Image (tube, rainbow, N blue to C red; front, side):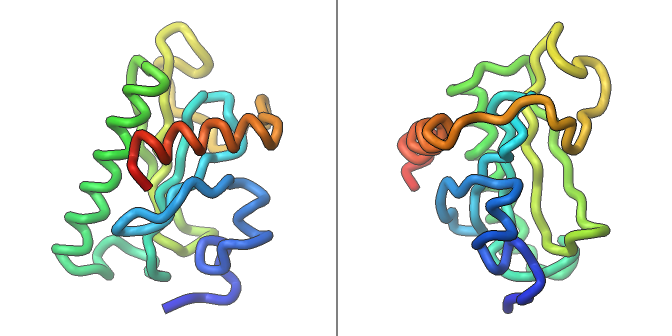
Length: 141
């Protein structure tokens, strides 16, 4: 099921404002969050338009978290963060998705919650694509 007003469902101009596509995983679509003050920040958006995790079956939930785990391992391997923070939001964009946010000891916002969109660091298009290639290779997607 898709929602024509949902950035994740439409996978076009709306999502391109904040996300760079990496690829499809079994449970959804992986994006690089364009604001990269936390280098390696990614979003995994569920494959169908559901608002709540309780709206999917146990099997679907288990696959979603297995994919999150796989992405987190790739983040640790590629970016070597001190910690990865995880955030699920959706009161404005009601599509199930998870932010995976690498944090670096002594770095931006270490020891506190991360800012949703601090508008501090954006990459060039070729830098997003290079990061996406590395992630695709590591995740085999």
